[in-house]
Image (cartoon, rainbow, N blue to C red; front, side):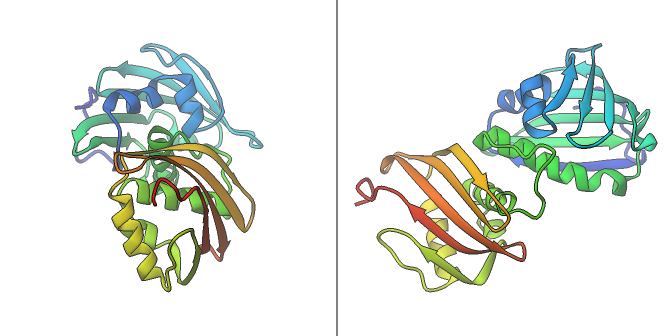
Length: 258
């Protein structure tokens, strides 16, 4: 539990996400400069040790957040916001990040107390997913991210299915989805999602190699590990329109599957 006295009646934002990784790995994302830079912003400096102070800047913005580290334990991290140059309402607010064992991984809970929830909810929802992406696949979405770009959407899809959230992945696909993959053909989105669910359930882990993208296209290169076929490297090409994935193309060696 958090070391802060966060009463249920205290105004603030609360949310949680499941991360398919041990708590130690999640804690690394919250307590090291490398970790925080990977999911929040590459412009982070200072100390993340208890009693230390660190600063978060944002590329292209004249904005800085200064935070004081109140406490850090094996399962909690507590920060006090000293100053936010663009949102003075943040000053004096407290952020508690707590880790609990969860089936197959870790439940990461955030409580941002002392600010209106609607002020911070959009940012936290993005950055919690960014933490999950960096911990699970090695690819976070720190600021600046392209909200409208194909890469952002492709990474959301990738993180959803690799975490077993197949319904979330399906929601990002158009009904008239086109697919081009070795060995099999799929006539509809439903057939693709059914195959993805069966195949994805056999995967032990996925390691991202590269992620590239523009306005309407993106390419992810990753290694899939499975006891069934060993390691399979896949290049996955996405075409995006109106914030939906319209086509998925796979390039990989079929020998391990055959």
